[in-house]
Each structure stands twice: as structure tokens, then as C-alpha cells.
Image (tube, rainbow, N blue to C red; front, side, top):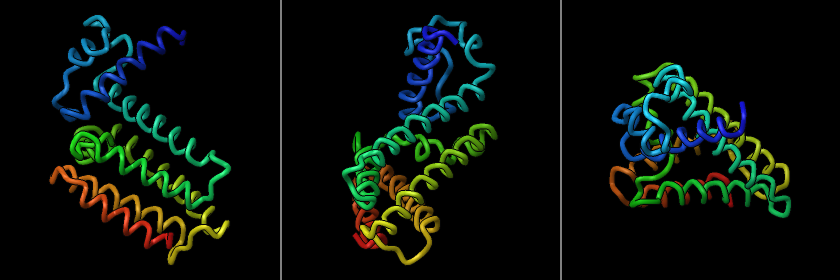
Length: 195
């Protein structure tokens, strides 16, 4: 696909992400996304077969960007694996405390909503969160190997438990409009990793 077409597609996905983070998925209309992206009305189906296919593409794009951030953190060769892990959790914290704890995580914002609305979006989100846990598992295993952290369970179980903890803390912080639960998640994370 030529760069200009990819740019238009990316503009639509970025516009949707911005709007969906505020309104949720079901409340967002296609025309609203087209207007925000500056793409002519009526051309949506040129880019996507359906709103469901569009939602799936939006989630894939979100996860691709998220993985790139995680990969940038791990690529810092001068830091220990424990520093990588804690930098990731600081990134998660900073993202979720933005805008009075309204956050920027589509998984937190849409997880329950899309699980009921779209099998394709649910499957994409399931795959994306599993990949996040997999990256966390590798970071934690690296920390055990280099001695910069220690754990009482397997790297995989630890990664799952911590990710679940942070998702739940993000949801409650969003409800309360205060980062207290995320502060607790950070403290628990440090205890679990012995850092």
C-alpha cells in the first residue's frame, strides 16, 4: 500500500484511539472519526470492511505501538533487567495517571465493552495482552538471570499476576479519579520482584 494510503489509514486509527479513549467504542460513530481525521465522509469503507474490522485494526495498531514502547525500554543495554521492568511499570503508571486517572490504555477502557460487542476485537485484545505478558515474562526472566531481581514464582506466573494487578488498579484508579491504587500496585510490584 502506498505511503499516502497508509498515512490516511493511520490517521483514521489514531483519531479513533483518541476519541474512543474518551467515549468508549460503542458511542463513537464512524463519521466522528472521519471528521476528526480529516478524511472525507463516505470513504470509511474504502479503508475498512466494517466498524468491527475497524475496531480490530485499531486494537492491533494500539498493541503495535505498545510493543514498540516495551521494546525501546528493553533495548537500553546500559540498564539491568530490573531497571527495564521498573521503567515499564513507571510508563504504565504515568499513562494511567494522565487526565485525573482517566488513562490512555485501551485495554482498561474497552476490555469489558468489546468482549461483549465483537469477537474479533476480543480475540485481538486477548492476543495483545498475552503478548504483553510474554514480554514481561522475558524481562523478569532476564532480571532473575542477571541477579537484579528475584521472584517467588515462575517468570510467567509473576508476569501474569503483576499485569492483572495493574489492570485492576488502573480500573479502580479511573473510578476514584486518584492514583492511590496505582501507588499500591507499584509498591506490591517492588515487593514481588524484590527490588
